[in-house]
Image (cartoon, rainbow, N blue to C red):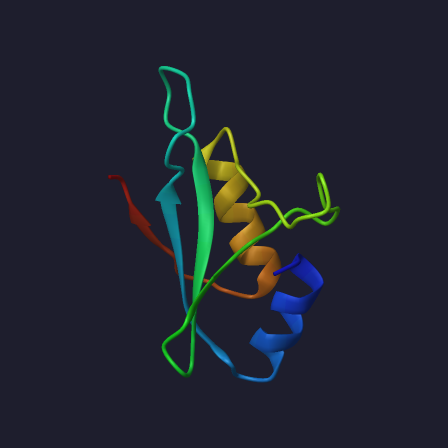
Length: 85
């Protein structure tokens, strides 16, 4: 989901938790990160890029943990869980 859609869901009380997880299959020596959100019905949604690439939605990948946390704050969360796999 895009950032604006996630903000609407948060304001409506539909997002329960935010998690920052290491991005799977991302090359490089340093970990890269993605944001996942848990909805009220238990489903997990990821933050996607605002634009589609090659006609499909693509997960937004962050190079730093700080940038991922700032984005979760922009959605409305004050606390975030970090999982490193």
